[in-house]
Image (tube, rainbow, N blue to C red; front, side):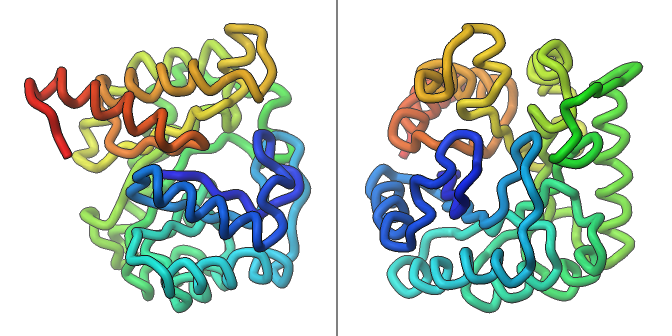
Length: 262
């Protein structure tokens, strides 16, 4: 899953693709590098990020989704928590909803149920503007699993088939370094859901905390974590660096399966 942030303030690439022409060029680059999914977002969810109006988010993401759908049959994900953006994005050609708030915003659950598109449910403690201040858990793995289990049940009751759901433990969203590392180490525990696991750690602060390096130097470690995540059971890797990550994942799968894969 290649990341395309149409924002001025995302933690890694904020501002780089805010211009529509730059966004289009990045989409073309990710397609050439072999991405399976392009995840388009118009509101940063980094720690301390400011909220974006509905109108602004629509203006950022809808034209690019329309353009990408006109040029390619690639699987498109829209990274949003707003019901209206979900509806308009799917109408424009998006295939999936990627929601860091797990359909808890007003109207989101009902909209996703009506759209009948796949949904990624992510765990986040708190809100982006404050989630990293003092995250606390008694048992981070048990609590994240309990949250996701509750959201899966809510979705099923609303009419969203379990087969339409993807789960994301939410690395870096209301978690300390130690909590992130514990979650990562115990990724196999999340296979009990029987649903694809999405892992998004690309260039994140947990890498900076361990290696003491800035965002622009975190690609090698991100790729290493991608391979490890696949080894531990992840099905979808959300990344800024498509070609390098795809190579790492292919090698990991070749070892797991004992043969090269497409």
